[in-house]
Image 1 (spheres, rainbow, N blue to C red):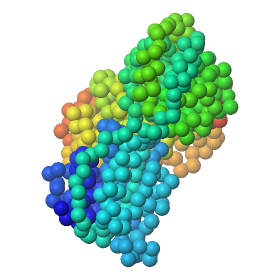
Image 2 (image 1 turned 90 degrees about the vertical axis):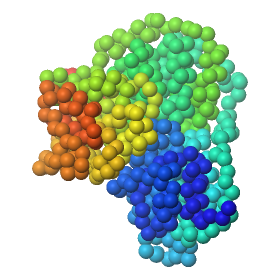
Image 3 (image 1 turned 180 degrees about the horizontal axis):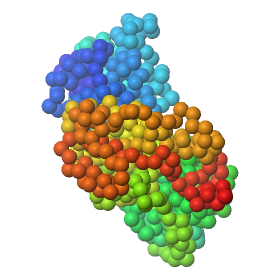
Image 4 (image 1 turned 30 degrees about the horizontal axis):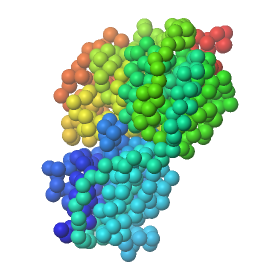
Amino acid sequence: MELNGSEIIVQCLLEQGVDTVFGYPGGAILNVYDALYQHSKQIRHVLTSHEQGAAHAADGYARATGKVGVCMATSGPGATNLVTGIATAYMDSVPLVAITCNVTLPLLGKDSFQEVDIAGITMPVTKHGYIVKDVNLLADTLRRAFQIAKSGRPGPVLVDITKDVTAATCEFHPAAKKQLAKETISRYSDDDIEDAIEMITSAKRPYLYVGGGAVISGAFREVRSLDSLIDAPVCDTLMGKGVFDGHDPHYTGMVGMHGTKATNLGLSKCDLIIALGTRFSDRQIGDPKHFCEQAKILQIDIDEAEINKNIKVTKAIVGDMREILAKINAKLAPMTHQEWNEMVRGLSKSYPLSYDHSRLTCPMIIEELDRQTKGQAIITTDVGQHQMWAAQYYTFSEPRTLLTSGGLGTMGYGLGASIGAKVARPEKTVINIAGDGCFRMNCIELMTASRYNIKVIDVVINNRVLGMVRQWQTLYYGKRYSQTVLDDSIDYVKIAEGMGCEGIRVTSKEELPDAIARALVATKPVVLDCVIEEDDKVFPMVSPGTSIDKAFDASDLAKKQS
């Protein structure tokens, strides 16, 4: 059948099982939006307030489901407004297809109105980018884009289409959605599996180190089975939350700059790290020269580029983690490490997470959210102190329930991501944990939530400062608070109400339980404006450039300063 380019785009989206797109229309993409209008019963379009919000919403949709998220924007500034969201997805390996439309082919390269080389701009932060200049190539290009976004190590793909292609016609041949083929990237052998088993069985003090790759691969059952077989303590990265049940007695918490002391000290005493889908980023390992120097490292990852990039490992297996762990588990006999586990549990008892219970604090807010949701909510976050507190104090027991910008650290990510997650999984309670600095960057997306009555809860940790930056200024910059004070007359409750949401202010710990309970049963989106003290700090902490066994908390700091 003969279709125009815009109809081909819609048909290809339907082939790929796309039920929702997030975007913002404009001149160059008008033909596509006309086709979406004709298919509004098959594909839901969520109009965000800003294109960056569309990219983050598509990202949240993808992280919450494992499916490919889709966002759209017009040429020029519409396309460039997607870039931060695309980069966020790239850094955290999120499958995303961003569809933009550009000026017509005769106008390309002539500095035409709203013309920009978006494929060139996004080249460093996409798995692949396309410019479609021929309608006959459009369908196959879109199909390849979805395959690339989802296969291997996932990531964003950009498809930029000239406006004349969206109007031109050609013969369209429907095709079934292709199943992903086994990745040729798997380069391990049976000998590699045997070597891994030998390393595991000979270790006296093994430690599981779980990263975001374990979420992406869907290997959480295999990870938990491995731990039950080898009887080892378990830690995770920010991106690996929920793969291992946070209630399990083997779990010691997050690793790295704001990881638990028990994890950082325990890892530093182990003799084998089993690293599952982690790239050993600087925020995890501190000083790479002194990271767990006594331990052998077994790294399992689908991306060969991550092997020996930040840390020299003893043994690496490149391939699909779920498949690799299934093979390892099948050949492992159960073992016990009672003495080792008792030592690590002793660290957890000696160095628990702690905070001031006499007044309202962010950890108290997170724990109350955890209690009232029974740990079953999807939590999105922005970036800063509140992000670390959420990772520390909410108990994640399932993967794909913490959605946060780990690699890029994108302030303003969380609200858009929460909208995408709630659209994708409407049966779940979805809560965004935001700082007041981040809220100022993304609060316009409250209008999106209100317009469609997407019932997210936006918890604003309001300390009237840029908290994480202020913490660093306090510790390392002599308390010179350059441009980090937000103490003004802005009323977040009135902003929420003005955008059609419910606003609730919380100023004391006594008000907190009822406020959260009220938010959980609200019939529209809610903003909880939680006012805390400006100088609360995230502890434990590892100073940048130092080894993780040098983690310190408030009591250590007080001793040092006395």
